[in-house]
Image 1 (cartoon, helix red, strand yellow):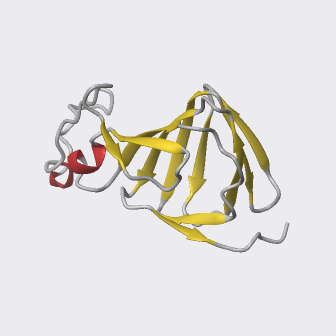
Image 2 (cartoon, one colour):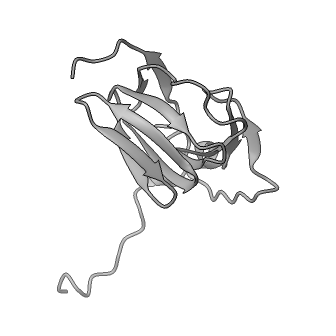
Length: 143
């Protein structure tokens, strides 16, 4: 058989414990979160993936009134996708990002950053690997 005619094998047993997750606006449960100005909705992926991945939405309640302060996340990586509105962030090394609806960011675990401001209507899809992601405050890095 050539490589183009090979039959794909079923994924290895490690994924066999994962289950299907389907969330709707009505079934996505409210979840605790890191910031008081966001409402967090759990999309059911943590349980379905056996803790390998977390997916949630963050929707502004009031809009950000002051920067979050410098911090990093203890995880392998964090992916954010702006569904609505905008958010301003700064990263170690001096990079600043104005994230707008339709744009995304991948933030490697341990990368220091600070959320500076958001629109009052910001809504973000956030994924983290693994599902457990701790936030660790830190000093502003030298640029």
